[in-house]
Structures are given as C-alpha cells and as structure tokens.
Length: 435
Image (cartoon, rainbow, N blue to C red; front, side, top):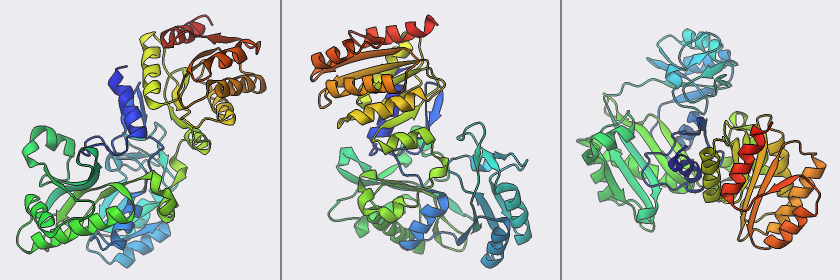
C-alpha cells in the first residue's frame, strides 16, 4: 500500500472541501477495498432533483415509484413522447449494471408506458450489481420515472467550496456528459473557474461569462446564466459543499436543463438542515459504520485481518501503512477522535471483536487531547467483559501515559505493550503468524 492510498481515505473522512471536483464523488480504492465514506450525506438522484426543482432549477418532469403498478401509472401521467426509467441506488454505473432478475441495465428508455411497468417488475425488489456496488449488488426499492428529453449539447457545471479561494468557486466546461477528470487532464484550457465572493454572491456578469464559456449562445446564454444563479441559491440554501451538474444541457427546443446532479452537504450544518438529512436512505449503509457513528467513532472497513484502533486520521494512515510494510493487512481503521470517553473505547472493541475477519487488534494512541489513562481503562474493561479472544497490541504515548501503562500492566490481561508504532505493527503481524 502506498501512503497516497491511506491519504485519500483520510481526506475523504476529514477534508470534505477538496479543491476541484476531480476526486469528489468517486469511490476510492485502498488496500484492495472500495469504500464510500459514511461521513457524507448521500441522496438518491430523485431527491437531488427534487431539491433543485424546489429552487426553480429546470429539471426533467419525473415521478417516483415503489411498485410496478405505480411506475406504470407514473408513465401514463407523464404523457411524454419518450420515458426514461432509472433504478435508484447510491452507486454509479447503473446503465451497465445487471439485476439478479436477469434484466440488464438499471436505466431504460421507452416510448411505451406499458413497457415501464414490465421493466419495473424486473427492477423493484431485485439486486442491481454495478462496478461500484458490492458483489451481491444492492436491492432496488425505488425507481424514477422521468420524461426523456433529447440533448443537443452537454456541458459540465459545478459549484464547490475551495479552500485555496476561501469560499465557493464555480467550475465549468463546454465538454460535459463525460468524466471531468479526463477533460482536465487532456484539455485543461476547457476548464473555466469563477471565484464567488461569499458575501456578494454570483454577480450577473460572472453568470453570463460562465454561460458564454460553457458555449451557450443567443437567448440560451441568459437562460443558462439564470440557471447558474439558481443553482448557487440552492448551494447556499442547503449548506452544500458541492453541487455538480453533469450534464447541464441544452435541448433542440431551446431549453437549458439540469439532466443529472450530485449534491454534497456540510454535515456540520445538520442542525439547521434537518429536513434534508432526514431524506438519507440508511438501507444501503454499512451496519458497522452506522453503529460506530452512534458513538462518534469514524469507521471504514477494509479487507485485512488486523483491526486498527487509533485517534486521528494521520495516525490512522500511518498505522495502516506500517502494518502493510510488515506484511500484514488492516481490517479497518477506526478513529476514536479527540473527546474520548471510556464507553467509546468499550464500544470500539465490541465492534472490532465482532468482525470475524479480525485475528489481532492494534491500538495506537498518541494522547494530546486524548487522556491515555481513560483509553487504558476502556481497554481493560472491554477485554474482561467481552472476553477478548484475539491478540491485542497496545502502543500509548502522550498525556498521562505512565498512569495508562500502569493500568494495563496491573490488569493481569495478556496485552502486548509496544514501544513505538514500528514495534506495535511488528508484534501484531507476528501474533497472527504464530497461530
């Protein structure tokens, strides 16, 4: 494993305002495991479209259905020349996905409303597997029935928080409907940026300049500028960290339409965005990550067999790397954070010991804010009450470390103390090799 791999994990968890949307929304691979971090609120496509619609942004007409009969009724209500049926799951690549019903593709176009009912019957209640889902796929519980519009031209547009600019930035390209990463790499001159004054908002001339850069002409120029300003209003209204529209397209009839969008939210604003956060679909979330979140623990499951229990993203990255360096494989990383309580330590051990893949646990704590003695008490309590069966290696440094080491040494428990991180990783890997 390279340091960069772990760095991506840490950045995803703790740096939601990444500059440029080149990594945002792309599940990252690390240690052979693909993971979508739990920290970010993730909405279904139809939910994002509803938020845009409520802010005056032009989207396709659509309905949502949970049964084949409701999908058929929605298709008839649309009374559209062509209809698109989309399975709603929190994963990309739906169009090329496969259902365990035998149906190929999670996105279908038809001009016959009756076909919508037949297709929905093979989608709803069945698992859809794509390049971004687990091997067994994800069960589809909802489909979106929308008006299919012809697209004469596709562009890319996004608003995101950029630390280097100390606020929001518009990013656009006349090359839409494709991976913006590829455009940035091959034709960077087609990427346009406009820094937004957070106090002033998007100025008319900025919106018009971006519309021109996106290639809109004539009356479409003003129409696109209006859509840009409404998207910024949405960005502010829902406390977004990013609103990405790909494509922002124009139709042969002369309309500017947001055909697809991804919205990221600032989870620190949950207290004032309760309606938005209440929309979150928890059925696709990892149960262990959800349980960890209850105790303010940050957890990401990996594919190894050595559980990592640390405090801080940087330390977590270093711990994963050094385990790999010694020939081991991390089973997870679990971050205790700063405001540690004894019960959190206990719950962390409960989560880790319940994982059948875990053959050893490595605790690596550097106590600055964290009191090592509190961690030590939580460790001893967990070992006794959970009757821990796997080897445990503990490395503690920092605040109250001598008291912590005394607690561990006097506990009478088979805990392997480590002098430093290298020693801890070596002992954890060796403890498995001895089995």
